[in-house]
Length: 337
View (tube, rainbow, N blue to C red):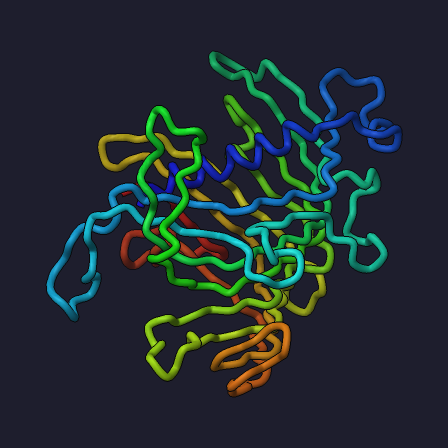
């Protein structure tokens, strides 16, 4: 799948939505930059709703092997990841609902009460081609609700004389994968540099997410187990996952995000390097079976809770194999085929 193209598509949707809702920062937010040139922007969005979101893979999966082989089943026909409403709460008819996190009497909001505050400066930098734009971003805690996520056959591209640009999917060829989830975050700071990026990466996160990260109501579906008599898909349902720094209640975020250009050895890709110490994870309410969110557990087995203390990841090769040794964190790359 063309992951880079898909990521760019999702980003463009978010940027377009934000651009239509920008407003001037209030006096409190502006006081921090009084007397300085540059541009300050407050994004005063209270809620963003997306009816449906489609990520189309136009060439599908190439045919491979025979029945039973790993990766078998490809037809080379366009398919799509679909995010749509799941009939529950705010995501009853909406695939994605994003708003501010109002928990604990607004403890996770910016003082300005904006969803995000941006301070933008341009600088000449040093040497040839050293100029850059610096965007210092503060983001309120977010309450992100995602409805049902599934996979489906894509409809054909709209003809030139079509009445809209909507493509959509074939409802008759659809399988749900996730029954939905909710993410709750605390306040975050990020610094973005476009141009020379002397900070060493296009985006740098070096902040503490107050209250940590919480994922709620996560349901993973298995439609392959459905039969004539067992009509409900099997599901792993998790009530809550909380992630914080080890022995803490907050979560430290230290990440460098760069877009690497194509060279002779590889295509271009996005590189995300995460730094930081060990994390604690608490997974509450693990259920197996078929789970009805409205009525509660139906035909399920409850495993209970699971706790992971001091989880630390590493990246890099050991020195014995010619590497520079293990480094705390993670290195993730995203690219197209």
